[in-house]
Length: 167
Image 1 (cartoon, helix red, strand yellow):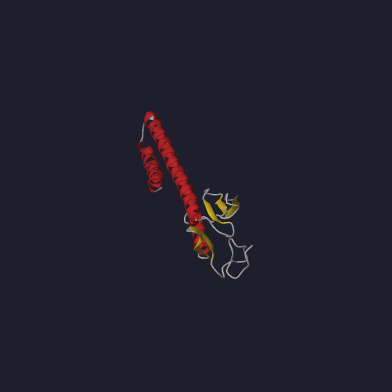
Image 2: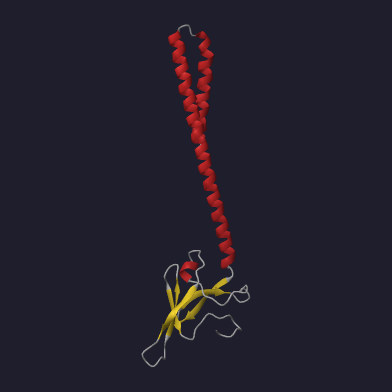
């Protein structure tokens, strides 16, 4: 943006120099050439200032985008403090609200993959796989709609808060 402003200022300076020299010109050809030079420098000044204005607008947009990203990261930083990583079943991990940080929300798990990428994505119940041995050992599947990750747990395992009855 500095270069664009300097170009605009350079064109304006050249205009004044040419205007000062107009009085010394004696022939119509010299005067016409001076007018052409004035017009060319005026155009260069306008182009430089327009480029500076465009660069300033682009910078303002970028600053606004960065400010929004900073706010999003601050909000996420505060939100992620409410959660801790749990072993849902046999090493399958998810994030769940810390005790006392439930904020009135129903028990839920968050996708560990999305959580570690700065996104809050709920694991949704997707169904139950019944084992062939008379239903013993069946598993429930919870899936992330954002990244398509899945979490298999015992059919009896559901997200619950300490001290609350399982759903």
